Image 1: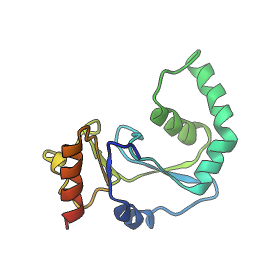
Image 2: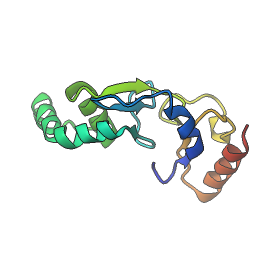
Image 3: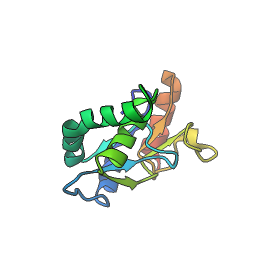
Amino acid sequence: VDPDAVFIPQRLRGLLSAHQETHEGVYLNNCKFGLHGPLEVFSRNAVKAWEKGRHQCLSYFDDLCNGDCMWGEDMFIDQCLWKVLYVRRENNFRLLVEDHCDPPEGWKDCRDATHVAFHPFKDQNGYMDCMQSATSAK
């Protein structure tokens, strides 16, 4: 979880029951444009797959891009787990609402009780206002 993301952990618990662990692992895609880094959710087996296969991903993408692909860590791990290591990628767009993922109008008021995290809030007052609204939303 990024430090500028307002995160409501009890909401995450409620969403996880819909995503069962698999032998190959599972991770949750939080945006229609691909995994965004403010909140990343990986199963134990997905983390094990990453640990075992990360060098395979480095080699694969180094060849594909003729060097560094110049991606952020979120895009790299998304593509690595999904396209190289074949970890199950499940969409859950209730994990995160943020300015880089086509948010609904008024999202910064944090009154939507269905989202787990809101991002970004760069100043303390904005962060605290969002936290207050999010924790009191029903």
